[in-house]
Amino acid sequence: MKNLLVYYLVILVPFFGLLYVMKNELIDEDWCIALLVFYAFIYRTLTDYFRLKSKNVITSKQFFSLLIPGSRIKYFKELYFA
Image (tube, rainbow, N blue to C red; front, side, top):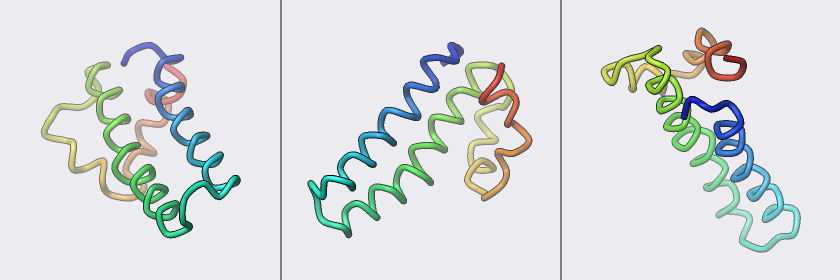
């Protein structure tokens, strides 16, 4: 996932889909909260990991360090601008 446009599409399309579902009340409120937690903690961690790994910024052993809140700040430039 070296292409920045693809990365933004991968992280934004599900988020806007989730917002659409929440706004139009297509599913129950409890499921919306569960999906939001899944998106924030699991989905984004995986997408950030694969982007950083494809750019050879981190190794596969550093995956669990991305689960720590605030640990992705040091990779901000590599994730969103480069």
